[in-house]
Length: 156
Image (cartoon, rainbow, N blue to C red; front, side, top):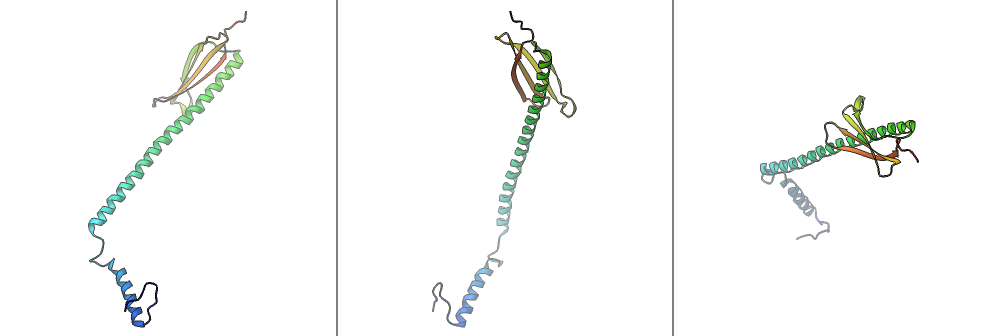
């Protein structure tokens, strides 16, 4: 006599038989004849290794991007600092004159170089001021452009 799904066995023998069946299904997974083979283990290790290598590669790429971003942030801060110095000299000197000046930053930023180029514009009263900050071991550079009063301009 077969019991239907969801129905409760009526006799004690039917309950024991059902429990043995459930137990035997669970224990067959771990038996030596139905266990995990060495090939399956090796395949799982290979799949896991490929996944870990992908994660580690993504980690190293993100570290490289983080270093580039940090260098960009430092370049922007140094360029702003240099522009503030130039602005102060423009205010004190009453304007700027065409020319080229360059140098290196001091302290922990000594591997950063700056260049300040001032050139005349078609509007005679203004000069174009270009500040470039670059790091010596990297090809990237940051350039800021602004305009200031031409010190040599005389009104007629």
